[in-house]
Every structure is written in C-alpha cells, then in structure tokens.
Amino acid sequence: MSIMAKPKDLALEIHTRLLKEYGKPVWRNPLPPLDELVSTILSQNTNDVNRDRAFEALTQRFDTWEAVRDADESKVIDAIRTAGLANQKGPRIQAVLRAITEERGSLDLCFLEEMPDKEVYDWLTGFKGVGPKTAAIVMLFSLGKPAFPVDTHIHRISGRLRLRPEKASAEASHTILADIFPPETYYTAHLNIIRHGREVCHARNPKCSECILQDLCVYYQETSTDAE
Image 1: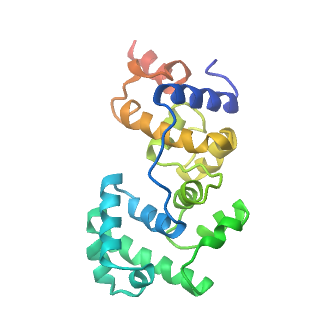
Image 2: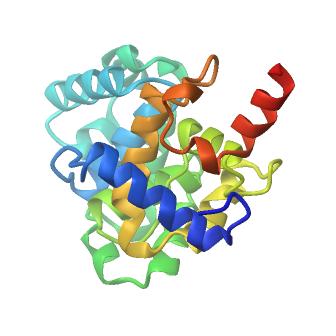
Image 3: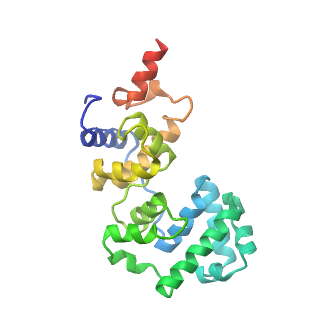
C-alpha cells in the first residue's frame, strides 16, 4: 500500500491493520440514548474513568432524569464534580433535559431509533452543548446508526496519516472520515484508532518505531527525514 493511495483505500488498510493488531473491540454495554447523551456531555475534557464516576454519582443521587432536570443546579454540579468543569456541565445537562422536555413533552428518546440518520444528527446537534462528537457517539453506540465520532486521538492520527486535510477541524473531520471509512467499520475503527493513539501514536513522543502504520504515515516520513 502506497502512502499516496486514495483516501478510501488508505482508510480501509488502516482499519485492517489495526483490527489485526488489536482485534475487534467491545465497548461497554450500550446505554439508552438519553443516558448516553448525558454520559457524553460528562466526558467532555476528561477521561473515561472520571466520566463514569460522575455518571454513577449522578444516577445514584437522582432516581430519574426528570429529577436531574428539576433539581437545584448546585446539587447537580456537586454530584458530577469528578468529571471536571462541573459548573459548566451541570447547567448544560439540565438545559438539554429541559429543552428536550419542551420539544417532546417527555424525556423518552426511543423515537430516534425510527428517524432517518441525518434527521437524528440534526435533531441532536440542535441543542446547545451537543456538538458533532456527542451526537455521533449517541448515534453509533446507543442507536446503532452510522456515525464516526472524532475525539482528540482520532483527529491527531487522521492528520498524521493525511486521512483528512492537515488543517481540517475536528468538527469537519466527522464528515470527512465518515465519507472515507466504510460504515460497517465505524465502530471498530473508531475504538481501535483511539487505542492506537493511547498506546502508540501519542501527542508527544509518539512511538513511531513501533507503529504498524509507519509506512503509511506522512508525519513519520516528514519527522524521520528532518531527524536525518
């Protein structure tokens, strides 16, 4: 496979190599869409462990999402402190819950399962604080709909491999990567690229000598040439 291969061919090769290296990943058990939405808001700018601790604390303190919606803001903030940025995330979660209630009359999101994919994406991103990544995570992991979430690892690696234009934003990269990866690979490719970013392709001091994508990587070729 040449480093100059067409983006779709390159994406499929990357997926195939990572699948061989890491296997088929299995994320946690799927959450209901509203649970996933709240969990993903909690995940912003923090790690999985702190997100899960905050989500567990929130659901232990409040019996229902209606109770979270109607609670004193300070109590919600206090419950999710382990997620970081609680003063922002607490009001954001409550605002989304209120907006959903105002539009739908309840907090039941099961109707999303029957909606066309594009309409689901547009509906979710219509709420303040719900961006492309949050919507894509809810779609892919909770609703089983085709979407390609782009986190910091995926944005970094896709840039180094030139799967996307070098200056493309994370927001723009959602559409770019969804167009070049086959939809049936979204789940596995998303999780394996993140794992590769955590274990090998670090933001600083990446382990290029150990990387199975080395021959496909523009970043490696540029930096190894610079080092010579």
